[in-house]
Image (cartoon, rainbow, N blue to C red):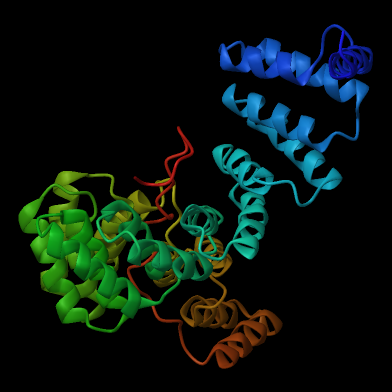
Length: 384
């Protein structure tokens, strides 16, 4: 036997003594390549038990667990690998993906930020970071990274739509309107995008243009949920109550339980001095799952007129609870307390009115889409 052969044999014997007959990285890799993921994970766990400071072993275990869709366990393995060796290649990205695929968007942000810090032009990390911010409802940050991603992938309409929605929810209405305009150039018959574009225009104070967008959506898809409510709300903002009434009634023809249409139609009946009709509509509105502040304000007004003071106080308190920044409920409640002789409570509510200097502006965002559209979590992948 040559000297080189003896050295090679000695190396193999030393490796066998070090790793044992089972629990070797090569064995785990072979099992993984054969699709035997549970067995591969067991081998990696054996390796880790023998070598608890082997960062690569933790990282490899994380990969196998991710392939088994055991993302919580995988994330724990990746974090251990990073703690042992922060510079280990690819682990931060894998950790971010493991958190993302669990829907833990906030937890995915830092790993993806770490990837971008090391590689600022990594397109996958840019997209995933933007989507993670979006999923965490941090829309201003989401828009920043999603714009970078969308501009580098102009054909990805789904990604551009998430960008546009991020701008909308960040109340960057100019950005939202521009992005929806680009989407409509490619798909002018998308009723839902016309609705979202209308929301953006409303945010910019372009109410007449917003109405036009909603009317286009209503023409394309007259039974689209909320499309008639959106037109009606915009007419309501302009105090064009006859036109608003027609649209709210059209919405209720599609969905008789649409709470917002009931509430705003009830408000019109109250303004037109039809308290009994208003009361019927408003009581139907508050039966819905989502509480509607306007319905409680108007109920408080109707009950006050009918001298049902206990019910009026309860309704107005509920309105204040739903949005303390709106002055109208504080004002009505303060005047009601004056009527009831509760001077201290009245003074407190009317002082609040002076602090607020009027009501906050009401817009469609949050009414048409009560929550940001969810990411596709079934696969945990960004839009393709």
